[in-house]
Image (cartoon, helix red, strand yellow):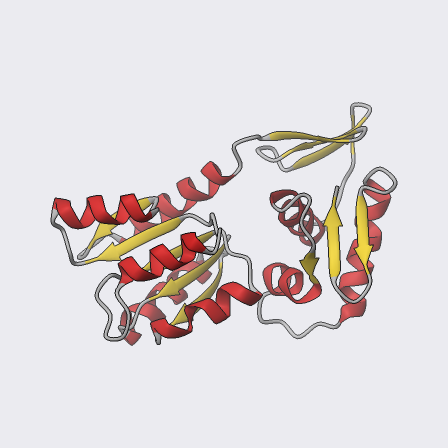
Length: 214
C-alpha cells in the first residue's frame, strides 16, 4: 500500500510513517496541510489519513476538496474529535473510516488494509485472454500461471486500478519505487516485461505523457 498522512503533529506523523513502513508500506507525510494537493497531483495513493484539527485548514475542508477533485482514494479520519456530529459530517463529505485518538496502532493498520481491499471490488479481472486474480496475486493465460516479479505485479495492479486512464511516468515511478531514485529506462524495462505477459495492444504508450491499460 501507498499511504498519505496529513497530520500537523510532527511526532505523531513521523511515528505513523515509521510504523507503516515497518509493515511494508510506502508512506508520504504532510505537516503543512495546505500542501496536500501537491502530493495528490503527482502521486497515487491507496489511502489517505487526515487529522481534523489543524492550524491552517480544517480536515473537513481537506476531505471536501479531495472529493471535489474526483479523487476516490479511501480517506481515514484520525482525530481527537469524538462527537457523533463530527463523524456524521465527515462521512457526509466522503470519508470512509473514522478513528478517535487515543488509538491502538494495530487497529489503524487493520482499518487501512480493509480500506485497500474495498477499493478492488472486482477481484478477478480479464484482460483479453489473460486472467488477473488480485486476491491470489496471480496471473494466468489458458490456465497456465505467468510468473512475474513483485515489482512488475505492483506496476500491473496500479495500471488496473486506473484502467482507461493515462498515468504519467512520475506517478508510476512514485507509486512503484517510492523515494528510490530511478530513471525512465528502468520503468521502460518493466513496461517491456509487462507487455510480454499481457495481450498485444493492452498496454498503450503515450510518448511524453505516460502509459494506459486498455
